[in-house]
Length: 147
Length: 147
DNA sequence: GGGATATGTAACATATGAAGTTACATGAAA
DNA sequence: TTTCATGTAACTTCATATGTTACATATCCC
Image (tube, rainbow over all chains, first blue to last red):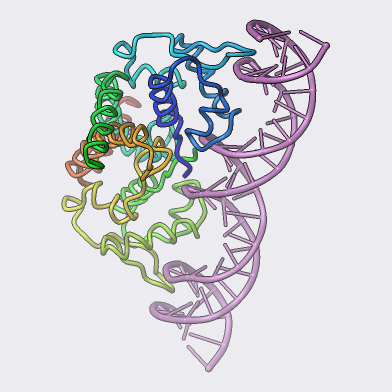
């Protein structure tokens, strides 16, 4: 199955934007991400609808972060992307008539619900500021290593 | 993304087999599951490799459970299916050069690893016997409801 | 032995959905 | 008014789970 990598992508994009002075164009972001400007606009557009970023057209236009990095969690970004399905595994039929299948679904649904709840809880605990700080640490470590 | 429903399918099949006297053919199972006999053989073949079921050809052939229901967990079935990817969400690149993307991946990987660990833990706690008992309860409830 | 029945498996078809691409409209700044 | 940027529709590509066809192989019963 092809994985949805949009959360990973927007995080990558947002941190680059945070490190960059002034707005960044879809073109510039697409080069950071190794993708296409249209894909960037399509995905960032969802974040704009959620009020997390803003975009400007024309000269000196592009994308900029519209909120405080410390106030944006991975959970908010996941929600902004439309809460895509978390699991690649699932029930064969959602509302089966067969009692056997109902018993199977009930057991699986419970397990998946618990795991999803934990994932979203972790997402809610991590802010963009946390990631930016982690990046800064990695950056400093690389500089130190180089001498 | 299209979800992998094989775990759901094999559970459904195994419980029908548990309720049924004697072996069940791929044909019969495929009708229970609403799928194709070849798909059943393909999937059940993985369980056979794990020693969980056995198959016989020819007259009176078919599939039968080779172990005690109380000794088989969902985790074992998941493993028998080749431990398919649990998540439909993932990193864009697995081992990026970009330090920003490394920081993003590290955060996401941790969250996903925790959620996957919880899911597999729950899977390990649920046996086929548990599901069979739950089915029996549902069956009794339906009979009672009908009068 | 020979027909009937069942699995084993390769090869190919279909369906779904994420991501990539092309094309062009719209809007803003120099 | 030219240039640069986003907005968005339409289409293509790619991955992969699942479905399907065809046929080989093994077993049972007569």
